[in-house]
Image (cartoon, rainbow, N blue to C red; front, side):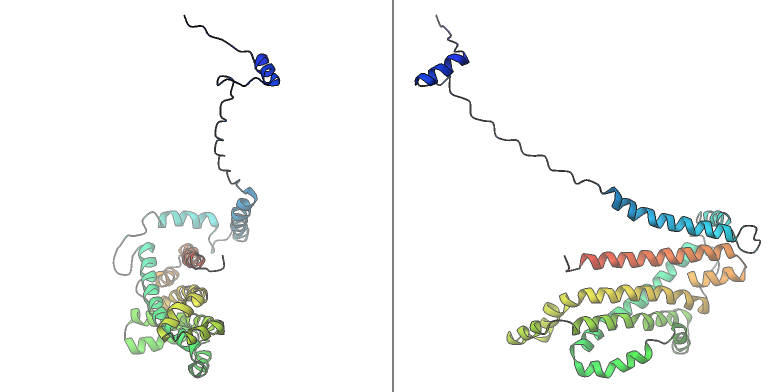
Length: 300
């Protein structure tokens, strides 16, 4: 016969005071391991969200209100509502084709972006290495700087006739204009970045007897990258500005030609739509390059 003995807590406490050793049943169970603390959730800063979203919305709303007040009762300048209705119809089929000179706005944007990509890419291939060379060697810097100061302020449209004369065609002439106008920010910013590299870095490279290629790739390039990306961002904005003006004069297909063609048709609503489209595309290009610059920033 098995008997069970139960000890009350009071009895256990009395035994402990009397010096009676505790039995295994009286021993306290080991404490349970502490539960891992739940990760704290980062609170959403609603003020920062509102300060990011609200000001642009208010600015656009103010623009529309002023536009609507100025065009109330006007028969020559379209109102915001009329422009919006025309935009809805226009973007309902942006990629239609009714001939070489009658294509949707989507095709015109893509053709302009293609010209910008080619001209800007050629400018980067020439301008960035040239900036490294100018910043690295003082003699070349003193030789080339006067030429840059002379040619950089020239209006973009002044280069277009030179392109038409040399290439005998509108498309390469427009690409040439983009190239010659977007190369200067990359050259100047890259050269300034090279010249601002601390001299101690170059002294260490000289002590280690590094080759010029290793000096450029291991020392100069990481230090110059933020300057170089700033020049690239400025250049792409210049390229997008130039292509619109160049296409107005050269014709063919492109957002600039489309604006000029709509003016010939006295379609002011489409001209206003094109202005907004040009601004939005330019903003997207700049923001994309800003994101790239932040990705490769060494400030953090």
